[in-house]
Amino acid sequence: MASTMGPEGIGGWPRRRAVSSAGATAIVFRDRSTTYEELSARIDRLAAALQQRGVRPGDRVAYLGHNHPSFVEAMFATATLGAIYLPLNTRLSVPELAYMMADSGASVLISSSTLEPSAAGAAAGTGALRVVVDAPDPEDPVIVAGDALDFEELLSSGPDRPEAPPRTTLDDRALIIYTSGTTGRPKGAVLTHGNLTWNAINVVTDYDVLSSDRALMISPLFHVASLNMGCLPVMLKGATLLLEERFVPGDALRAIERLGATSISGVPTTYQLMLEDPAWSNTEISSLRMLTCGGSPVPDRVREG
Image (cartoon, rainbow, N blue to C red; front, top):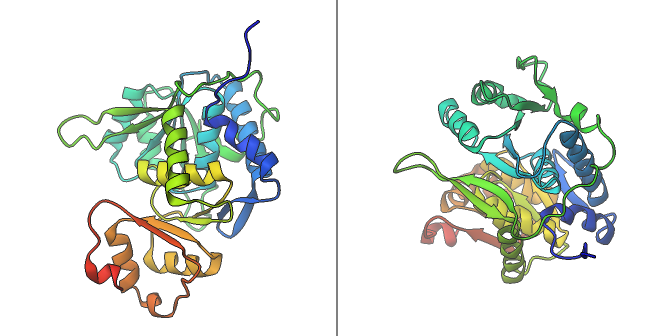
């Protein structure tokens, strides 16, 4: 009789963390905290709801939106079902997004209501199930296509857990990240559960990520660096993600002080803009123990600032 034990993909991380990190905060967003138990329960319900709507192993689930807890929930729910997650760049044009939706064969598109025109255009003609996150602001209404489902309503529509989810291995596909396409059409780079797992373990080891860390995510999670070097190692370790929807220098500085961030990551321009912001001179940043940077060398004046 074949054993059911063996390697498991990233879909199992939140459920294990709900036990080993019981009571610990997984995500802080708009000053609302979500524990690992709450996160795991939401991921299971979302996975069950997507399964009821036909998502099967190998299917592609796309996400178009700024940093938000639903990005994390959708990623792990997709992994739980053995499907493949497709984060889309919010800065792309509708034709570019439409190409990626068609090229990947995505059957679901989860998107922010603030990006509704882009999402509707990207999914047009694909037959993809549309799910919209966040109710439109009543003071700045967004017209959502009538066939789109509300994310929270979808999440609460199914059972507590998916039925007999497949057991994924580290060799199974987990993620598709599209390249910039500077010399032609963008290419969908496929990353396996093993790629994501071992990369996260390497980051945890090399950066000495602690379960007590509070990692401020100001870079977009759709980017492979923010996702694989920031979000996933934090989730693996049971630390806390402090999600900022997008990078605004003054807001980032205030978040460091208000939320007690211990780590932050960006490119040289990220730090230069914070250094030049009026809030820099009176912001308390002593909670930071680690700052990482990539993309290009850090100018001396920024490093010494």
